[in-house]
Length: 411
Ligand code: 2IO
Image (cartoon, rainbow, N blue to C red; front, side):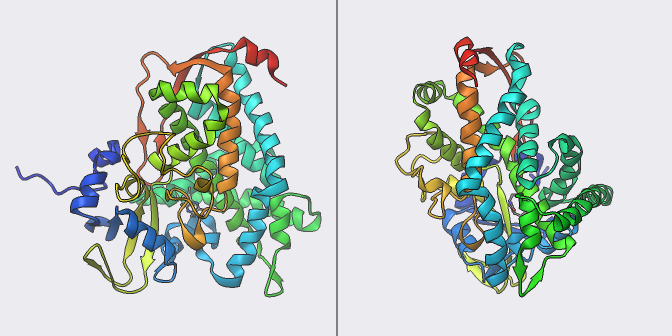
């Protein structure tokens, strides 16, 4: 029987994408997937070019990929003065004084969530801890009720499934649209209330943003709130789970981080480079273009393969090695526009939450690592990752001994 041609949509790619990265970069750097009529780029320089040239490679893809569930345009779809004004309003909540406030909220939520597991000595870091934490913290930033986290989480699952799936059945599509509409139904009365009585939260700030002398409609505010919710929640538990996976699988590096917590930012930066939680970023080619010698037609959908680009030997030495000491990591730059890795994207639409992402993962890891002595995979636990758009551990069942010293020292 003839071997079927390699596909990014195949089960074997989904089981371990990184096994295919070098072959793609070397033999098929512009890989075409006929069933979804899309091109996949795996070389660092091509991905960097596409992300940086936002006029030749636009975010028009989001009109079909995101707008139906976001209910309006997200930041990444905007350009010019409108983009600057709205992006600024969001960034202000995830940097500076606001960020210091978020860090206190992150620490308090994390301490509360981990507490019941300490006496048990076991926890699923992704499902018991990371997911609820990410939703609760984001709700707090938005000024929404933390107690709504389960409902919001259920609606968000639908929104995220829509954005991050490569092919949806009509049935799943309907399900996702229903969830999105339920989330909108929850948000709109709150938006209207914040217009009447503004608070210090991000929703109130978004209601007050003026562009061309007009404020945003409920639909526009809903889209930006949903944008923040998806972007702050979906990659967070994945990054935390991936960080612990790498440290557990590299006990020498875990011991170093335990001894010297100042190494944590490097461990987080290397986790993002090595296993980016957002693996694909779509763009729309405005004009016909040739990349890596391959012509791409005008109007084509192009997927940047962030994981493959971050493992390109042209960009990082020994790219398939997890090494928090690598000389080409540039830890401080890793959370800025000058980052070498592409896990936050690059250029005009680079992630607005980079500083927040770093603060969140660093705060949580700095709290958990001293608490969890002898942290290891639970007996019988088999590590498994899912997703090709966003990707992370399906679960991370850990056994540990709760440190009595750290317990006693807790605030
Ligand atoms: C929400 C895919 C989790 C973003 C998206 C429609 C726009 C944009 C991203 C990231 C991560 C999500 N794209 N965040 O890739 O806001």
